[in-house]
Image (cartoon, rainbow, N blue to C red; front, side, top):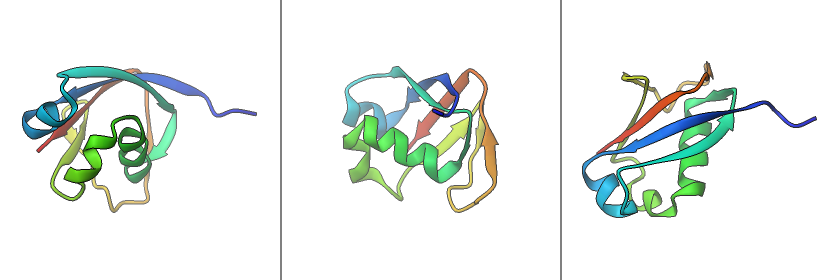
Length: 84
């Protein structure tokens, strides 16, 4: 059985916008994920972000995510920002 996915709007800021060539996009992510899994999924969808790994932060609905946390994030349709 495939995990339930939710649509997430991705907003690119500063260098992330420059690297991807877009200001926003939409992806579908599993409903319950860790911050690290969100990061990995975004880097799979936008490989140019790999060059910025460790230099950017993720924000979900305007709250910063702790990439090192193993806590599950339960997603609903919302916005993920990539801030460099």
